[in-house]
Amino acid sequence: MKYVCDVCGYEYDPEIGDPDNGIAAGTKFEDLPEDWVCPLCGVGKDQFSPKAE
Image 1 (cartoon, rainbow, N blue to C red):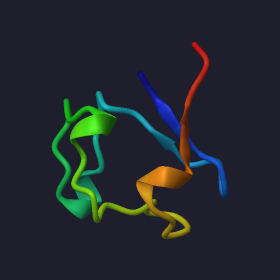
Image 2 (image 1 turned 30 degrees about the vertical axis):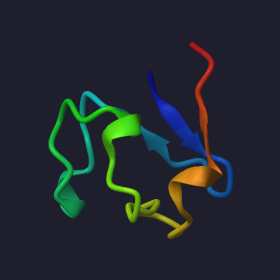
Image 3 (image 1 turned 90 degrees about the vertical axis):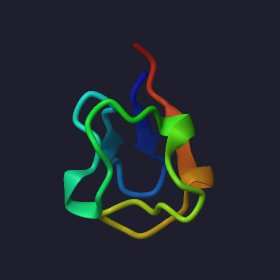
Image 4 (image 1 turned 120 degrees about the horizontal axis):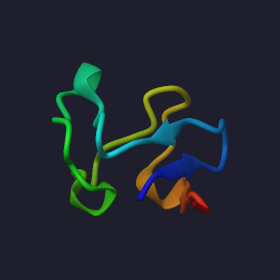
């Protein structure tokens, strides 16, 4: 499932991960480190919502 940043609209796709920040492809949103932040605007995981499929 993809998650979208409520602040800036960045979409976290687990199939891609966040390679620029050391997050491997295949990493579920729930498995991201607690200190991971949105790569675009810097807000925490609590500011993301599941994307409606």
